[in-house]
Length: 60
Image (cartoon, rainbow, N blue to C red):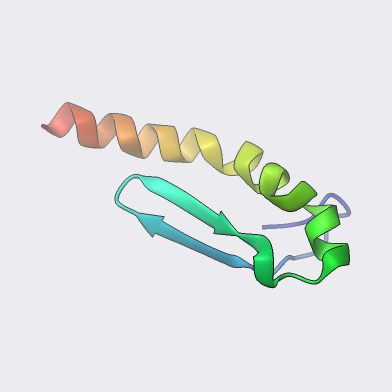
């Protein structure tokens, strides 16, 4: 993941089944601002999350 400035951002991101959880609470305030408190992460990850969810739903 990169910030809006293109720098790598280290945060807790984990996969649970087909969903993604972003916890930026451990990021320094300036980094949280760069990723808009997770909104930048959400926008880049939602497509792949939805694809995994569709795949899991189709398999059931």
